[in-house]
Length: 460
Image (cartoon, rainbow, N blue to C red; front, side, top):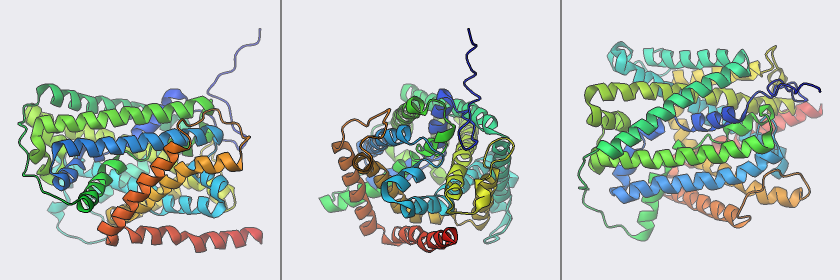
């Protein structure tokens, strides 16, 4: 009898190693989603909504939207398990320009800006243990100043990029360890708050709003929870490196999003049980997680939660770095970006794409502009999710006979409902916060001349 081949050594036609197993894919989904947002953004939502039930509702709605999108994405990921993931889905559904604009937005702001923001959050929480890292002690040095926190954030980006450049195994092991630790810490906080919290049910006086005004407020309060649950699609960027993608990608997407949604709603219920709505809204520097841990377990609890957030942000940066570079690699492989980015190193990973991503993310850290850029692209990023979901009906019409190992349930009503909700939120954000929404579309469209340049260069 012939021996069974080792499942971890298969290689794709392009040279990428299929070394991401079932648990690795799940850890990449969960670890990329859970960063610093769950420990911070509830404060702003609480201030806007002024209602405990509505705070839980906004997190629930964000979770349901995430699950609806993940179900749709699972069909696309199983159908097209290629490097670049959503870039490939857009290319096949809407044409090469749409795919390029997605990849352009990811490299310019969305992925690199998120890497910069989460790395900066790591540095801020590290300052809890090392006060000399506090930027406040160095005064206002302005943009491009190498403050201690910025240097730490850049160091994290460089360290994890170097780790991932050594091979896929190093990146997945790092992801698995830190995802397990961060999820355990989050569940411990949720269970501790639900079982030991004693905060009263008093709430601020309710504000009477007309239905249109309430819709604007709810949409604004939804932004933080919704984007705390993004990045679940990152696993599709490395789809070509996933073993048995027809099975493992849908499972990772659906189970991972379900785990995070349940954990986030439970954690906010614990916040309410521990701090009450007013305590959430007035948490120092919006650090709701450390405030809740401090209320439960005293100063030692607050320090323990700060350490847990360090673990969470470190693991999140790793997942974002591992997956994000695959988009630039796929664009270059199609001839739409620098050809050097399509090269694999001896470890069969796109090292050049990894280091370009690191360089730009580090520049964003140093400039301090990542937070503003991310606010600008919130609405544009939501539009990209709407287009992702709508790619399911588009490709069912364009390629009805293509193999689909997983078919999204509720077709086409689920996709249409998600698109309707997403577009409604986009309109509300444009009406309520025009200054921080329309620039995101300008950044997205700025990729059009770049695409035309590369297209002309390719034709030559």
